[in-house]
Image 1 (cartoon, one colour):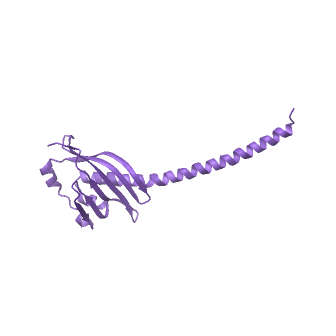
Image 2 (cartoon, rainbow, N blue to C red):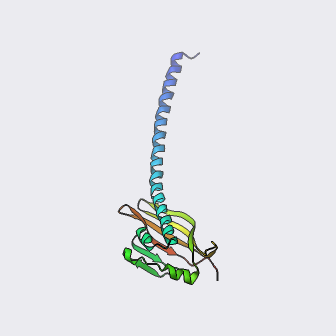
Image 3 (spheres, rainbow, N blue to C red):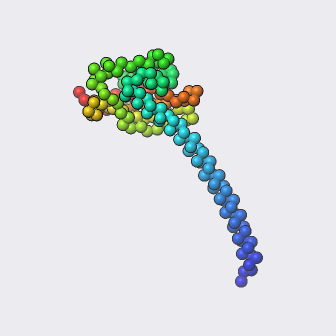
Length: 169
């Protein structure tokens, strides 16, 4: 028969072990939560900037597009052509010509995947579609959009669009 003193000793030792283990597990859990939160914050804020860019684009609002951009703003076109805009004043998209030439009505973000995240930069792999007024797509392009934080402001800094994977002749 084991004395009650031994049970008490085993119980205290077990309690100390689980208390220490519990504290260490809690610290590890909190540390991982902080790391995940640190990664989610830039991703969330950058995603909001990307969505704001598309909202401004669909409203044909050059001022809002410039406001949600960081500079220099770089665009790499489907054939590799590069356009660098160094100032807000250089953001000028001719939406009337876009409507006349393509019957463009709006664009959609069909896919947004986060490729890379750092504290001040997020790379998004995207697929976008230009659409007619009835909502049907006439061109779909994959691309890479890079959203950066400059002086606390999240904005689109680079967009690179690949040739269309779908296009209505």
